[in-house]
Image 1 (tube, rainbow, N blue to C red):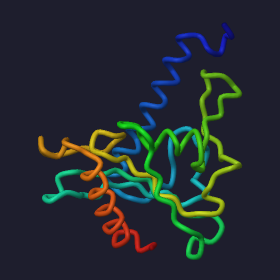
Image 2 (image 1 turned 90 degrees about the vertical axis):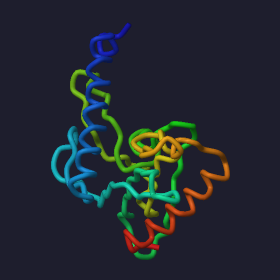
Image 3 (image 1 turned 90 degrees about the horizontal axis):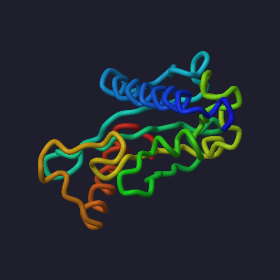
Length: 173
């Protein structure tokens, strides 16, 4: 086994990921625009907004989102709503490992984890809203017992309500 992939280093990696998640949760309650994050040197060179939008009859389902503005032409570029596969998968996985603006830099091993810009991010050509849906996926949650009940129809209703409300909140559609 390579020295950089020892079990102790994996623990550090997961502690870093947990700390990053916790940081975003705390920021989502205090403000929406994220300018810096742990592991990335300096201010973020893109607009990142996080927050919750309530859906359901009593708005008892709180859906968490990450909005990343296009770095090319945000007012003319298309908007992508990204809903991860799951159930229960967080959009943060895609944000950090696939098409989002950041990636983990693991070239130096797991002892010195940092974040770097993703050279192939889709945000070079589109605005993206990553959504944790349904309740229980990622940071989304339900405030009532009934809010945890889900089906394809309920999910479609919640996604539709989310799109309508995020349009009003972000003024982007």
